[in-house]
Length: 233
Image 1 (cartoon, rainbow, N blue to C red):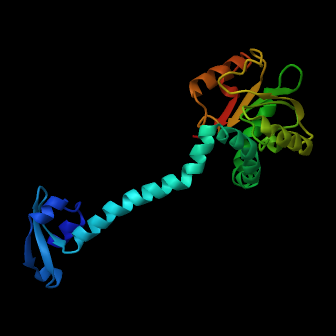
Image 2: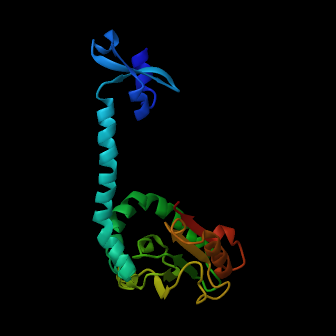
Image 3: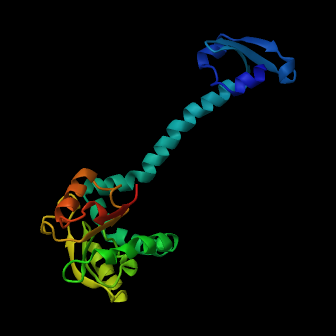
């Protein structure tokens, strides 16, 4: 019973060891143990427990220092102002690699969801679709053929990937690519869009509330709530 209590509670503090009484314990296989009186009661502690605690006291600061040294180049790049440009340059390549595996997992859901877009055609017989946080154009293949697509993303380095995606999805009409944040899409007129799509975006923006306000502004007045497709965290 004493052994069970020892394993289900936090170990005593260092000062408890010094105040302990050394005894021979049959429950511990005849080994020498310390019976320590703590605020949690009387518990047997293995003789080498203080040594293990001392090792951890040294090991934890060492690991913290090691992590700091390993990340030091990143901190220096950020301090010198190079980190953000590097991220913007290489992040699209990473996203392009991840797109294929992501679409395989989400294909059924995306086809089911985006098939409803055709029901939201404007008077022109086309759907004015805005994709917010378009990335590499991973969703293009799932949009119906009557879409005129406008893309918004704060990273200008996505444009060449978008051009490639549009060339592979000629059933769509590509309008333009706007470099902007979702919180401020002033390049888009009020009530100019039939549909807004944003996937894996609202979990990463600075202000989801401002993004949703901008989405509401650019959507046409009719059925605004029904015309927004978004998922993510």
